[in-house]
Length: 278
Image (tube, rainbow, N blue to C red; front, side, top):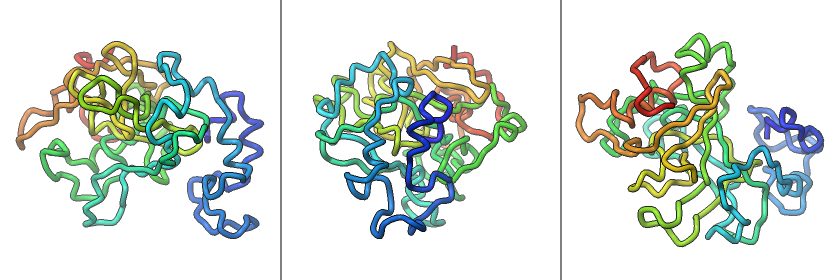
């Protein structure tokens, strides 16, 4: 949504009624009682604007024909991580909300900001083999809940050319890969989907069917990302879903580890990433 003025869609942006700042929380002054988000009721202006199709948000390789191509319709919100409460079991889980209705037709996006490994996870972030035995707080990315990271901060950290900024996905499972449904489960709405992490790797790679809170594409064997300096690079999917099962180890130089390094804003690692990045 914040990109609208920069992709020739300023006319939509200027019509939005709810606050469009990173700090906005309900209740909102001057807004009707009960309207706490753009999707609270389906007849408000913001919801109707969310139906708009923004072609620059859509990847031509995605054969998406409409919400009927999914099981549950559009994603309307994302949480990465799902909780910022220290000690909560949800600290390491990314999640979101979807309509559970594949007749709801909202404008789609194939792109979302990169939150690093899994967003702004509070310590301790080194949990289990399910998370790859990674200190996730050290691999926070550019975009996460309430983030206000400037390009200057990106440049002074790991460097804009070394940090993933925006990645692509079809927004759900890949039909025919792994054990997904016959159709993808959901799709991302540009109004509601903001960021995702790289903890799950890139799919499909022959074993991973993709995920509604991760990255992947219909391009053969690769997924495209925009770096912090604006350059677009293709990352090879193969091996990026294989997380280390022992600790300590040499996971930092595996495809999965290199992907976490590229996603992290200030991890300080400088391993050669040419094995996964073109």
